[in-house]
Amino acid sequence: MNKINIGDILDFASERSARKAIFKEGQLDVGLLLYGPSQTTPDHKHTDIDEVFYVISGEGTITINNEDFIISEKDIILSPKGETHGFNNTSSSNWVVLQIKITS
Image 1 (cartoon, rainbow, N blue to C red):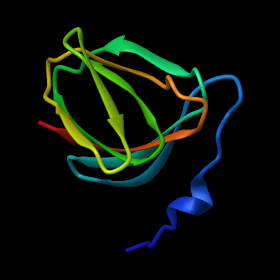
Image 2: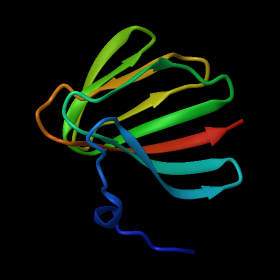
Image 3: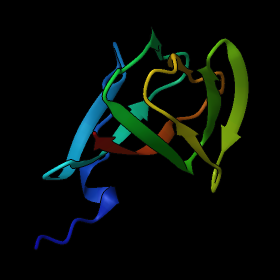
């Protein structure tokens, strides 16, 4: 088992959001979503993946099935498989989101 310090893998790209892998084992895939100010991920969906998003720091908007949710530090939200979701860092600060994917 590897121990990872989140601070060691915070590497924001200036031109687009980034995903940093943390753990992948069987059906579980955990990573960090890193958004600089104004960075986005367009709406998309997965037919075989449930996802949980936990905000480590910052604030932004996640859209799930065309409904916007402002989520900030310590907020957690579920996007079940088949639901459309997207991200938008609407703040002037970096936004760090822990992503937990479970494949069915």
